Image 1 (cartoon, helix red, strand yellow):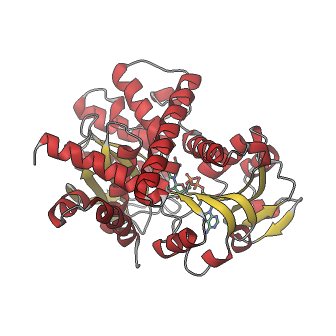
Image 2: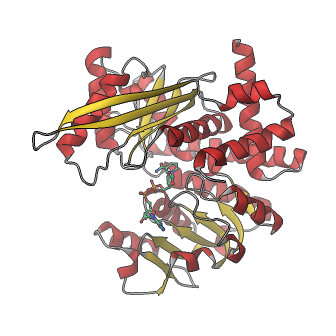
Amino acid sequence: MSGILDQTLHYFNKAADVMGLSDHVREMLASPYKSITVQLPIIMDDGEIKVFTGFRVQHNRKRGPMKGGLRYHPTVDLDHCKSLSSLMTWKTALIDIPFGGAKGGINCDPKVISDAELERVTRKFINAIADDIGPLKDIPAPDVNTNAQVMAWIMDEYSKSAGYAPGVVTGKPLDLHGSAGREAATGRGVVFVCESLLEDWDQPFEDTSFVIQGFGNVGHWAANILYDLNAKVVAVSDISGGLYCEDGLDIPALYEFVGEGNLLSDYPDYDKITNDQLLALKCDILIPAAMGRAIHDDNVGALQCKAIVEAANSPVTPEADAVCFENGITVIPDILANAGGVTVSYFEWTQNIQQFQWSEVDINTRLKLKMRKGYATVAKVAKKHNVDMRTAAFIVSIGRVGKATVLSGI
Ligand code: NAD
């Protein structure tokens, strides 16, 4: 399977086969509602003009305003946005929040352009798509290489023409209508899903070993929360490699080390391992929290975990997914496992349009309810149809989006 678009379609069609969906319904649900490409010429700091391209793909709007991140990366293109926007449709439907799916980005590299250039290209992009976004239309959020500051510029630019509108974007700074608990939300959601899985296994956190690939926002929060629950996080990694300790790593110490700008491979303690060795470690739960397609044909045979909880988007290729199923490895799919982020984004949007603030305890309690209900629904459907958790998740999502489509009229 060549790319990420094929990958999402493959999972969609697998579930659609079980549901017996006709070709025209498949086409309507799988293809995007609207794809936008805009030219973004800006004056660079040296006076030269450079032309970037901005994309926004709005996949489905039948269950609510469309929701999804903005990615700033040289490889961003329409196909990537199409695939990721459909994943957002299935994710928001599965976790049952009143949104559709979207995704977008700009083909720029924030590592080589200045902050001032980044602000100019962001504002230009928002001006270009202002008629298509809004608190009740399409609500962007951070993704790869975009952060709370970029979201603040988006809110400001959009508000110039539409009136003060914090609900146009989520993932904003706390001092500018952001939400408590948003930063930790995806990692925390991953842990709530692990909690449900362990209940199915009748196994406490204290007796469970975890391996986590990626020690960024999602990976380090998941590791920290698991550490606080007395689980044994035996290995973690970043792009430089990983660290292993059979008795469990001191996660707060590693977090402090990385927070000082260091790479994990430079940590003075513990056994050093490569990312390939990390994936092959014996453990109860493996959490890929780095990049897509980390587990594929060539390395899936080496896995020794009992379950994979997909914190990253699309970390397991369809070919590897099939091997996991044959080998009895449970895979909890991304559209469930990493839905904590968009769930708290929904809480942020809700607070913005209500002009009211919730406490972090309130947010985390509501997040737990959503994640655990999502898991329970998927587990029930998997049992009913005798399918894997990913196919079950797609069946639930497609069913919800399909019903909303029929009810609202074609
Ligand atoms: P991040 O940039 O904060 O962290 C990524 C981590 O992965 C870093 O530690 C980096 O060193 C490591 N990494 C990168 N390439 C690697 C490689 N080749 N091998 C091993 N490690 C590597 O990113 P994040 O926000 O933590 O997101 C991680 C994943 O989760 C992404 O797939 C993202 O799309 C997905 N995700 C994130 C959120 C969120 O709220 N941040 C929500 C849903 C899904």
